[in-house]
Image 1 (tube, helix red, strand yellow):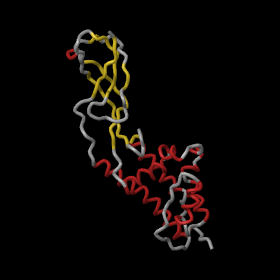
Image 2 (cartoon, rainbow, N blue to C red):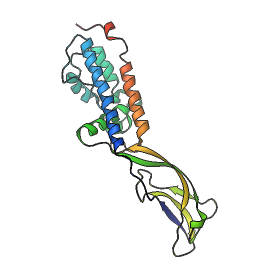
Image 3 (cartoon, rainbow, N blue to C red):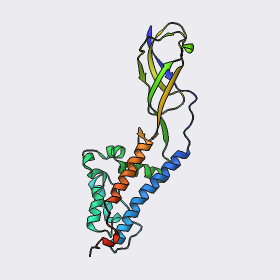
Image 4 (spheres, rainbow, N blue to C red):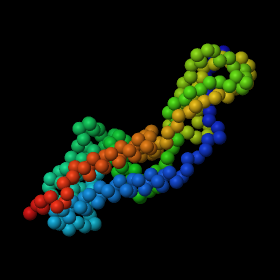
Length: 231
């Protein structure tokens, strides 16, 4: 009879734990660049920055209004407005997103979540995830199964790759009591960030964060010497 048979991974190696440390270093540097920006903007206004000055990353206008009173103290009003314009909730593309959705999809909100996790709780986990598979059966290993031409296959659970993870399921006809086969497969794997960035490619996520930080800094392109302090 025809049935659905699962092909599973075995001998899966662990992702080096050092990768989480490298990710944490990147997040710290990205977050620090924004805080340095605020410090310099306060100095450019002939004010004295303090320990409370830092770049706020907020998910609602109310949260920003409360945070800005302390975090942006001593800054020019137009600079403070430019920082509000850079907030996740103010981005037109994300205007209808809830705070929960922003945490998952907006690069600045993702930076906030990942950075806070890394600084205050634990390292951000890095997970291997399967993105595509090209496969063919190894004829010498097929036992008690009939694989028709054009066998249908269905991807397995591709969230993370661990020992025993289902690579794919195939439709085949059982012809004996102990069906089995091995496959020759080329598996496309990418590294994901877990928990605070579910199913997000590590490289794509960190590149998006870097691009967002650079775009924010670029909003303040005039040199300090050309900025006029507010009186």
